[in-house]
Length: 252
Ligand SMILES: Nc1nc2c(ncn2[C@@H]2O[C@H](COP(=O)(O)OP(=O)(O)OP(=O)(O)O)[C@@H](O)[C@H]2O)c(=O)[nH]1
Ligand SMILES: [Mg+2]
Image 1 (cartoon, helix red, strand yellow):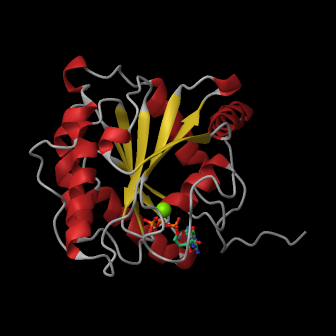
Image 2 (spheres, helix red, strand yellow; image 1 turned 90 degrees about the horizontal axis):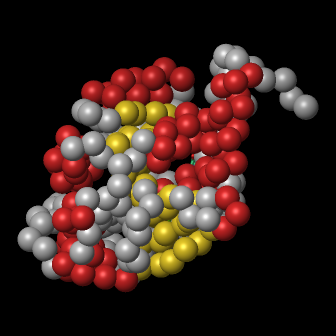
Protein backbone atom coordinates (compact mmCIF):
# COMPACT_ATOMS: atom_id res chain seq x y z
CA UNK A 1 0.00 0.00 0.00
CA UNK A 2 1.24 3.46 -0.88
CA UNK A 3 2.53 5.51 2.07
CA UNK A 4 0.48 8.56 2.97
CA UNK A 5 2.29 11.86 2.35
CA UNK A 6 1.77 14.89 4.56
CA UNK A 7 0.69 17.18 1.67
CA UNK A 8 -2.43 15.18 0.72
CA UNK A 9 -5.59 15.17 2.86
CA UNK A 10 -5.53 12.25 5.28
CA UNK A 11 -7.77 9.51 3.84
CA UNK A 12 -8.56 7.89 7.18
CA UNK A 13 -10.04 9.34 10.35
CA UNK A 14 -7.65 10.61 13.00
CA UNK A 15 -9.11 10.24 16.46
CA UNK A 16 -7.83 11.58 19.72
CA UNK A 17 -9.08 8.59 21.68
CA UNK A 18 -10.59 5.17 21.11
CA UNK A 19 -13.85 6.58 22.45
CA UNK A 20 -13.89 9.24 19.70
CA UNK A 21 -13.29 6.54 17.12
CA UNK A 22 -16.09 4.39 18.54
CA UNK A 23 -18.55 7.30 18.61
CA UNK A 24 -17.72 8.20 14.98
CA UNK A 25 -18.16 4.57 13.97
CA UNK A 26 -21.62 4.49 15.55
CA UNK A 27 -22.59 7.58 13.55
CA UNK A 28 -21.33 5.90 10.36
CA UNK A 29 -23.16 2.66 11.16
CA UNK A 30 -26.34 4.66 11.55
CA UNK A 31 -25.86 6.48 8.21
CA UNK A 32 -25.11 3.17 6.48
CA UNK A 33 -28.67 2.00 7.28
CA UNK A 34 -29.99 4.48 4.67
CA UNK A 35 -32.53 3.14 2.21
CA UNK A 36 -34.85 4.74 -0.31
CA UNK A 37 -38.10 5.91 1.24
CA UNK A 38 -39.95 7.90 -1.41
CA UNK A 39 -39.71 10.37 -4.28
CA UNK A 40 -41.79 13.56 -4.29
CA UNK A 41 -42.03 15.79 -7.37
CA UNK A 42 -44.11 18.30 -5.38
CA UNK A 43 -44.50 19.11 -1.69
CA UNK A 44 -47.96 17.56 -1.47
CA UNK A 45 -46.40 14.21 -2.38
CA UNK A 46 -44.10 14.32 0.66
CA UNK A 47 -45.26 12.05 3.47
CA UNK A 48 -45.99 13.66 6.81
CA UNK A 49 -43.25 12.41 9.10
CA UNK A 50 -42.58 12.89 12.77
CA UNK A 51 -38.88 11.99 12.64
CA UNK A 52 -36.14 14.62 12.11
CA UNK A 53 -35.35 15.39 8.46
CA UNK A 54 -32.05 16.74 7.12
CA UNK A 55 -32.11 18.42 3.69
CA UNK A 56 -29.18 18.51 1.26
CA UNK A 57 -29.51 21.65 -0.86
CA UNK A 58 -27.29 23.66 -3.18
CA UNK A 59 -26.52 24.55 -6.76
CA UNK A 60 -26.83 21.96 -9.49
CA UNK A 61 -23.71 19.82 -9.67
CA UNK A 62 -22.48 20.90 -6.21
CA UNK A 63 -22.27 17.26 -5.14
CA UNK A 64 -25.42 16.73 -3.06
CA UNK A 65 -26.28 13.26 -4.33
CA UNK A 66 -22.64 12.16 -4.27
CA UNK A 67 -22.20 13.30 -0.67
CA UNK A 68 -25.31 11.34 0.38
CA UNK A 69 -23.96 8.23 -1.35
CA UNK A 70 -20.56 8.72 0.30
CA UNK A 71 -21.96 9.31 3.77
CA UNK A 72 -24.30 6.33 3.52
CA UNK A 73 -21.58 4.22 1.86
CA UNK A 74 -23.89 3.26 -0.98
CA UNK A 75 -22.98 3.62 -4.63
CA UNK A 76 -26.33 4.51 -6.17
CA UNK A 77 -28.74 5.42 -3.40
CA UNK A 78 -29.02 9.00 -4.68
CA UNK A 79 -28.69 9.74 -8.41
CA UNK A 80 -25.40 11.47 -9.04
CA UNK A 81 -24.25 12.57 -12.48
CA UNK A 82 -21.86 14.79 -14.42
CA UNK A 83 -24.93 16.31 -16.08
CA UNK A 84 -26.32 19.13 -13.93
CA UNK A 85 -30.00 18.80 -13.06
CA UNK A 86 -29.83 15.04 -12.52
CA UNK A 87 -31.94 15.13 -9.37
CA UNK A 88 -35.43 16.32 -10.31
CA UNK A 89 -37.60 15.39 -7.34
CA UNK A 90 -37.20 15.47 -3.60
CA UNK A 91 -35.86 12.02 -2.71
CA UNK A 92 -36.20 10.85 0.86
CA UNK A 93 -33.93 8.23 2.44
CA UNK A 94 -34.81 6.58 5.73
CA UNK A 95 -32.26 6.01 8.49
CA UNK A 96 -32.57 3.63 11.41
CA UNK A 97 -31.62 0.16 12.51
CA UNK A 98 -33.72 -2.98 12.11
CA UNK A 99 -36.25 -1.36 9.80
CA UNK A 100 -37.15 1.41 12.25
CA UNK A 101 -37.04 4.96 10.90
CA UNK A 102 -35.47 7.46 13.29
CA UNK A 103 -34.47 10.14 10.77
CA UNK A 104 -34.69 11.01 7.10
CA UNK A 105 -32.24 12.51 4.60
CA UNK A 106 -33.72 14.59 1.76
CA UNK A 107 -31.85 15.00 -1.53
CA UNK A 108 -33.17 18.10 -3.29
CA UNK A 109 -32.83 19.11 -6.94
CA UNK A 110 -30.15 21.72 -7.43
CA UNK A 111 -30.74 25.30 -8.53
CA UNK A 112 -28.89 27.69 -10.83
CA UNK A 113 -28.51 25.36 -13.82
CA UNK A 114 -28.53 27.72 -16.80
CA UNK A 115 -30.11 25.28 -19.30
CA UNK A 116 -33.35 24.97 -17.30
CA UNK A 117 -36.17 27.14 -18.74
CA UNK A 118 -36.91 30.25 -16.64
CA UNK A 119 -40.47 29.16 -15.80
CA UNK A 120 -39.35 25.73 -14.56
CA UNK A 121 -36.59 27.40 -12.54
CA UNK A 122 -38.98 29.74 -10.80
CA UNK A 123 -41.44 26.92 -10.11
CA UNK A 124 -38.75 24.81 -8.49
CA UNK A 125 -37.33 27.72 -6.54
CA UNK A 126 -40.82 28.36 -5.15
CA UNK A 127 -41.24 24.69 -4.18
CA UNK A 128 -37.85 24.66 -2.47
CA UNK A 129 -38.48 27.91 -0.60
CA UNK A 130 -41.80 26.54 0.64
CA UNK A 131 -40.17 23.26 1.63
CA UNK A 132 -37.48 25.03 3.65
CA UNK A 133 -39.90 27.36 5.36
CA UNK A 134 -42.69 24.95 6.13
CA UNK A 135 -41.49 21.34 6.32
CA UNK A 136 -42.43 20.75 9.95
CA UNK A 137 -39.93 17.99 10.78
CA UNK A 138 -36.96 19.68 9.09
CA UNK A 139 -34.22 19.77 11.73
CA UNK A 140 -31.17 20.65 9.66
CA UNK A 141 -30.00 21.96 6.30
CA UNK A 142 -26.73 21.02 4.62
CA UNK A 143 -25.92 23.65 1.99
CA UNK A 144 -23.41 22.15 -0.42
CA UNK A 145 -21.12 24.51 -2.19
CA UNK A 146 -18.25 24.05 -4.62
CA UNK A 147 -15.52 26.14 -2.96
CA UNK A 148 -14.15 27.10 -6.36
CA UNK A 149 -17.39 29.04 -6.93
CA UNK A 150 -18.06 30.07 -3.34
CA UNK A 151 -21.52 30.97 -2.12
CA UNK A 152 -23.44 32.45 -5.05
CA UNK A 153 -26.39 34.86 -5.09
CA UNK A 154 -28.82 31.93 -5.07
CA UNK A 155 -27.08 30.39 -2.06
CA UNK A 156 -27.29 33.74 -0.26
CA UNK A 157 -31.02 33.94 -1.11
CA UNK A 158 -31.50 30.47 0.36
CA UNK A 159 -29.67 31.52 3.54
CA UNK A 160 -32.05 34.48 3.85
CA UNK A 161 -35.05 32.18 3.50
CA UNK A 162 -33.95 29.85 6.28
CA UNK A 163 -32.55 32.57 8.57
CA UNK A 164 -35.74 32.87 10.71
CA UNK A 165 -35.77 29.10 11.22
CA UNK A 166 -32.04 29.05 12.01
CA UNK A 167 -32.73 31.68 14.68
CA UNK A 168 -35.38 29.33 16.07
CA UNK A 169 -32.99 26.38 16.22
CA UNK A 170 -32.83 24.89 12.72
CA UNK A 171 -29.32 23.45 12.31
CA UNK A 172 -27.25 24.56 9.39
CA UNK A 173 -24.00 23.48 7.73
CA UNK A 174 -22.16 24.88 4.72
CA UNK A 175 -20.39 21.87 3.25
CA UNK A 176 -17.55 22.76 0.89
CA UNK A 177 -17.49 19.83 -1.51
CA UNK A 178 -14.84 18.66 -3.98
CA UNK A 179 -12.12 19.81 -1.56
CA UNK A 180 -9.80 17.47 -3.48
CA UNK A 181 -9.77 20.09 -6.25
CA UNK A 182 -8.08 22.64 -3.97
CA UNK A 183 -4.61 22.92 -2.49
CA UNK A 184 -4.43 22.82 1.28
CA UNK A 185 -3.97 26.61 1.44
CA UNK A 186 -6.87 27.27 -0.92
CA UNK A 187 -9.08 24.90 1.09
CA UNK A 188 -8.28 26.64 4.39
CA UNK A 189 -8.98 30.04 2.85
CA UNK A 190 -12.32 28.83 1.43
CA UNK A 191 -13.21 27.37 4.83
CA UNK A 192 -12.47 30.63 6.67
CA UNK A 193 -14.68 32.58 4.26
CA UNK A 194 -17.50 30.01 4.49
CA UNK A 195 -17.35 30.12 8.31
CA UNK A 196 -17.96 33.87 8.20
CA UNK A 197 -20.80 33.48 5.68
CA UNK A 198 -22.43 30.62 7.58
CA UNK A 199 -23.62 33.03 10.29
CA UNK A 200 -25.29 30.88 12.94
CA UNK A 201 -24.23 27.66 11.20
CA UNK A 202 -21.06 25.66 10.73
CA UNK A 203 -18.77 25.17 7.73
CA UNK A 204 -16.71 22.10 6.84
CA UNK A 205 -14.55 20.77 4.03
CA UNK A 206 -15.62 17.58 2.29
CA UNK A 207 -14.38 15.36 -0.49
CA UNK A 208 -16.27 12.32 -1.69
CA UNK A 209 -13.25 11.38 -3.76
CA UNK A 210 -10.76 11.46 -0.89
CA UNK A 211 -13.28 10.55 1.83
CA UNK A 212 -12.35 13.77 3.59
CA UNK A 213 -14.60 15.19 6.31
CA UNK A 214 -16.71 12.04 6.63
CA UNK A 215 -16.32 11.66 10.40
CA UNK A 216 -17.07 15.29 11.16
CA UNK A 217 -20.20 15.35 9.01
CA UNK A 218 -21.46 11.97 10.31
CA UNK A 219 -21.03 13.11 13.92
CA UNK A 220 -22.69 16.45 13.26
CA UNK A 221 -25.74 14.92 11.54
CA UNK A 222 -26.11 12.38 14.35
CA UNK A 223 -25.97 15.18 16.95
CA UNK A 224 -28.62 17.17 15.04
CA UNK A 225 -30.98 14.22 15.16
CA UNK A 226 -30.21 13.45 18.79
CA UNK A 227 -30.95 17.04 19.79
CA UNK A 228 -33.95 17.59 17.51
CA UNK A 229 -37.14 18.83 19.11
CA UNK A 230 -40.48 17.42 17.91
CA UNK A 231 -42.11 19.27 14.97
CA UNK A 232 -44.51 22.02 16.15
CA UNK A 233 -48.20 21.28 15.57
CA UNK A 234 -48.96 24.64 13.92
CA UNK A 235 -46.82 24.04 10.82
CA UNK A 236 -47.67 20.40 10.24
CA UNK A 237 -50.18 20.79 7.38
CA UNK A 238 -48.11 19.89 4.33
CA UNK A 239 -50.99 20.44 1.91
CA UNK A 240 -50.92 24.16 2.64
CA UNK A 241 -47.17 24.22 2.21
CA UNK A 242 -47.18 24.18 -1.61
CA UNK A 243 -49.41 27.21 -2.03
CA UNK A 244 -48.17 29.54 0.70
CA UNK A 245 -46.99 33.11 0.09
CA UNK A 246 -43.28 32.42 0.47
CA UNK A 247 -40.98 34.41 -1.84
CA UNK A 248 -38.98 32.20 -4.22
CA UNK A 249 -35.22 31.91 -4.24
CA UNK A 250 -34.73 34.36 -7.07
CA UNK A 251 -31.98 34.83 -9.61
CA UNK A 252 -30.64 33.11 -12.73
N1 LIG B 1 -13.61 15.59 -7.59
C1 LIG B 1 -14.78 15.45 -6.99
N2 LIG B 1 -15.92 15.37 -7.73
C2 LIG B 1 -17.11 15.28 -7.07
C3 LIG B 1 -17.17 15.23 -5.66
N3 LIG B 1 -18.48 15.15 -5.31
C4 LIG B 1 -19.18 15.13 -6.46
N4 LIG B 1 -18.36 15.20 -7.52
C5 LIG B 1 -18.77 15.17 -8.95
O1 LIG B 1 -19.62 16.28 -9.22
C6 LIG B 1 -20.63 15.93 -10.17
C7 LIG B 1 -22.01 16.29 -9.65
O2 LIG B 1 -22.30 15.48 -8.54
P1 LIG B 1 -23.80 15.23 -8.03
O3 LIG B 1 -23.69 14.54 -6.71
O4 LIG B 1 -24.64 14.60 -9.07
O5 LIG B 1 -24.30 16.75 -7.82
P2 LIG B 1 -25.74 17.25 -7.33
O6 LIG B 1 -25.48 18.43 -6.45
O7 LIG B 1 -26.53 16.15 -6.75
O8 LIG B 1 -26.36 17.76 -8.73
P3 LIG B 1 -27.92 17.98 -9.11
O9 LIG B 1 -28.65 16.71 -8.81
O10 LIG B 1 -27.85 18.33 -10.55
O11 LIG B 1 -28.41 19.14 -8.31
C8 LIG B 1 -20.43 14.43 -10.46
O12 LIG B 1 -19.68 14.30 -11.66
C9 LIG B 1 -19.62 13.94 -9.27
O13 LIG B 1 -18.81 12.83 -9.55
C10 LIG B 1 -15.94 15.29 -4.91
O14 LIG B 1 -15.90 15.27 -3.68
N5 LIG B 1 -14.79 15.40 -5.63
MG1 LIG C 1 -28.36 15.42 -7.25
